[in-house]
Image (cartoon, rainbow, N blue to C red):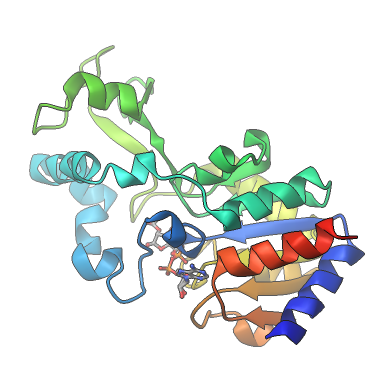
Length: 253
Ligand code: OAD
């Protein structure tokens, strides 16, 4: 394992064009479960309840999502762990072109990554949008105002249907983050994947783009990923532990 970490540290030292690509595994040590590990979100919730079609058609599905927000404050109150902080430190060292994330928890920004450098492919739980007038609201403010209600409230501005600003199944990814992520995957000399099974597209195409364009690809992930065979380094260990080791090694030079 140490040889692999040493190899990754060498790759990091060699370039200032690192793009980080993260998934739910970077946030499990902040107390937020991932999706596909045992006990993960999809072992407790039915993904069929998280489609845009059902959300638009069914008041029950909308209420379920509202109650999910109410019942899981850890999603909004979680604090960054050493993996997020290690990623922010790499940026502070001038080594990072951008952070592409599938996560909706805002923890990269809370850890100190510059907000404009973080590209959220699946949206964010920190905002609620109106599907009618496109007004945007801060989730915590909506919850503070309407949290006693079991039903999803209507838009304060126009009475339209609200929705957490996250990508549901069947929805297109937000165009700007997707475009920027694709550009970054072409600009990267090292793509560092942290905590993703790399099975959900189009996000999972990012390592393929990077590799095809000549970048090295390194993966830090507890379990297998769909890109292990194509990667230059695969480290199967805890993200916080590996990122801490990397940070200490780089600070020591
Ligand atoms: P997954 O749950 O598919 O994968 C998370 C990966 O992180 C797993 O392979 C774990 O082994 C690994 N992992 C967990 N804890 C870790 C830790 N402390 N250190 C290192 N690795 C760890 O989550 P994603 O790949 O993010 O999309 O899933 C992608 C998308 O699938 C999500 O954004 C979500 C979901 O459906 C939508 O909801 C649109």
